[in-house]
Length: 322
Ligand SMILES: [Zn+2]
Image (tube, rainbow, N blue to C red; front, side):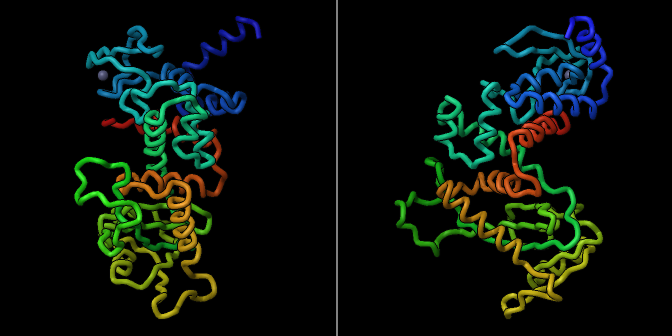
């Protein structure tokens, strides 16, 4: 393409709406699967720069640091770049992120992922959990139709934690299971594979409500085990509830209402966490719930899908504290 038509395209970019900018970036990433995620974020930010501290749109360019354009806010006088106050702040080598995301679509563990991208184990760990913080938040917005909800339990784990253990360290294979605290995890999944999950502080209706409020369609029919907490939850959120007394052998109602899909989800989740990662620390369990949710959604998880999730996070949900 000649310079003049290209300049016309470049000039018209500033008048695009937020949605049009996303479409343009997605289209470019489809054209070039090896696109640099960091550069895509920087160029998208440069089209409509906004201060993450005071939301002012009056920013002036303020030199470069670590090959990144810096800006200075005219209102609050703070300096920033395209990654400030996002989960990607202060991460290096963005040109390797796409390759790292590719590994995540195959559940690559830390060491092979580090080796594939030529980064240290520490960086591999840092990247994984920064990306997983984004996936953790990517819960189903609405569960529709027949939905299954059930809790499962994970043994509390302090994997990787060497200091401030709340109990003496145990030798591998010598831990008495009865002494472990069990951590409840809720999974709600509809038959279209929309999923919402959470690590629960307790099994009360209030705690379930905290995670599910606004996420269950008013016309959904929710299958749950019979319990007072579940009955209270159904009353609070006003959805139709099919109560299964599984402890008495009642596993299916009217041929279609059951918990088989969600229980199978629990089982595969546990096999994945134990088999692939040899267990995960409880403090990171919600990250792995998000990863598993992304891997088992209605559409296959691809690097482009992850790429888009990250772009959405950076431009739609900037965070205050990272
Ligand atoms: Zn500002």
